[in-house]
Length: 388
Image (cartoon, rainbow, N blue to C red; front, side):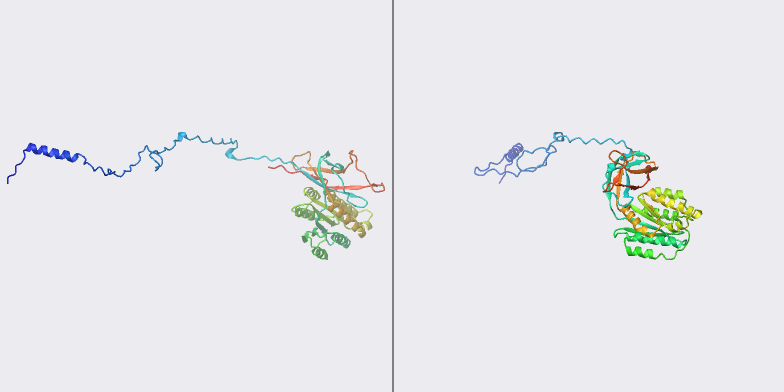
């Protein structure tokens, strides 16, 4: 069988028509819905900002920083004039002086209560001061019994023992007492304690003295130095002849120490008064005794204490009753000195009693008889030194 091949031009036309038919879409049946291709996920363009949501095609753009309200301004830093931001403070020291004073009737040795601020007059270097407060107090005592125990005279040792035992009996359970003896040097028999049995044992141990020298200035200086380390009011009961034989310190130096030691009151009880009465008639012995008495009285007066020279043992109960009235009951006077310089100088102080018109206060008993009294207080104090 013979096949007729079309003309080459006819083959080209037939090929083009076939290609045209292939490019036309095929007709779908009317009953079927046209198939949809799945949606393609496209990456967001750089212009599309914000989170992707499934609620629609609208996407809220992020607020620009220009739309946000401006932040509040930062607080202005304080201007610091001090270098390196250091903080300096200024403290003004206003001096306050407390004076312990006792008012005792001379006849009965009783403490006079009920006095007010307007009944007191304080003179500092002769200048009247304004008293800011007055209060009374009755407190336990902290005291040192400073006893002369030297091999110089049996009569002096016997007087010392009697006086120390009477003071020991007047103690109360809450009193703190130390016992120190002195001859060529000091000896601490017992430190501060309220155990009366221990104090009694220390006094009973005074049997045989060691030396005959009585270095009273050195012993008093050491005792003042020890008591100055204790807070509060302290008392020294100095029982001895008042003579000093071999101290390294002079009288001027011990007086300066007494002046510069605050809150210490010295009471002195002289021994050997009866022996001196028997030896009366002048001479070196009597001059030594008078000088010793003057030294004891000076120590007591400078610190607001009392000085006694009992001749007979029967005077001791009355003496220690007066001492107890003085140290257990006292007025505390507070004032701001008109001389407020911190120059370390010594200020002389005098305490007087006056009435409402400024005249010396007069006291009377129940029968209208005048009563003599004594105001016991320090005669001065040392001002503070300037702060460097």
